[in-house]
Amino acid sequence: MTYLDNAATTPPLKEALLSLQEALADYYANPSSLHQAGFRTAALREEARQRAADLLGVSPGEVIFNSGATEGNNTVLRGIGSLLKRGKKIALTAIGHASVENTARALEREGTPLVRLPLIKGGLIDTEHLEGLIDSSCALLSVTAVNNETGLIQPIQGLIRQARALHPDILVHVDAVQSFWSPLWQEWSALDWDFLTLSAHKIHALKGTGLLLIRKGRHLHPLLTGGEQEHSFRPGTENMPGIIALGMVLRQLAKKRDSFLRKIRHLEESFISGIDSLDGYILNREKGLSYSPHILSLAHDYIPGAVLQNALSEREICVSTGSACSDRDKKNHRVLVNSGYTGQQALNTIRVSLSPLNSEEDITFILSALDEISKTIGPLYRKVR
Image (cartoon, rainbow, N blue to C red; front, side, top):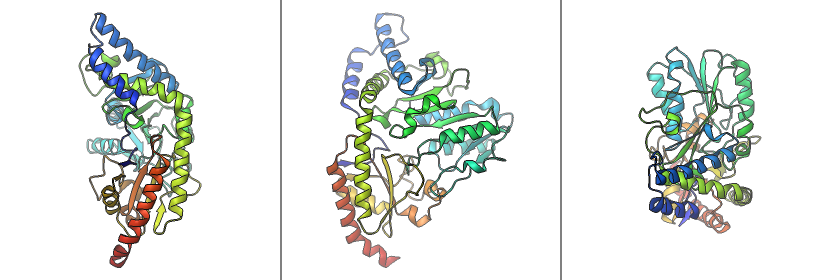
């Protein structure tokens, strides 16, 4: 099988699987328990917290473990409830992840006004036209750093600077789930955000574990009430196997990120070069914009994305037509259409997403398959058009 759907989830590193086995066998004690077994488990939790803090350039006290970015995004958007009750607004784009978009829409139905940020072709936030949109009535700016469908990198530094100039007290939330292979990853410690959300399974750790980073001095109302775990921001017994596995993966990634990134960039270049030589395909990328190398969105002139996806799946090649959280809704092309692409181009799009575990052979295989599919199926859809 050729797995090229790494933006949906990544295969766990062997270190994650080994640590999972060890955690289940030896570190099953509740980390809140005041006995030796509990202390040992809690020590591993704090070791993982320190690794996350070191990698992101924050203090351990700013790192909260949770179930993933969907929970984190909900916690941030809903956690500023006291501000929203006073009529404050949320500023965001129309191309964020479903866990941001649908939570914002739910809050809008409950009476929270939304401010939609302007976009240029490709989905880039137009930072030159924020005046009159972001002002003292906005409680929160929520932005996705790297788009999960196109790989577009937003100008986070300039956006935050402009937002702070217009409203110094605005809170800034960044969904950083897809940012690991982008240049932004090494900039998070220097950027002026307030809340940052991440998912472990997008960086070769395990599903069901995530990180919510809350800058010191910032406050949120927790989604849940219960015990005092995670500084009372996330009550409930922690997912220790997932946290321990994340800690092990973070240690490996800290050592290997540079070499892994070089490999992904090489695979990206090979894929783009190959697509340029094929008839019928176009990359959903705009000149002058920046993209993370691990996500490639491409469309066929005539063949629907769902058909391409199925044809590739029959050849044991795994890709998606968009976000896995929206992929089953074949009519949901919100991100691409709001990024300025036509409905037809959005309909005909698939997403290929890479990891350092992929190989040059994987790229050669999918390019050959795409060429064959275009030549055999393409003429049929061209006649229909």
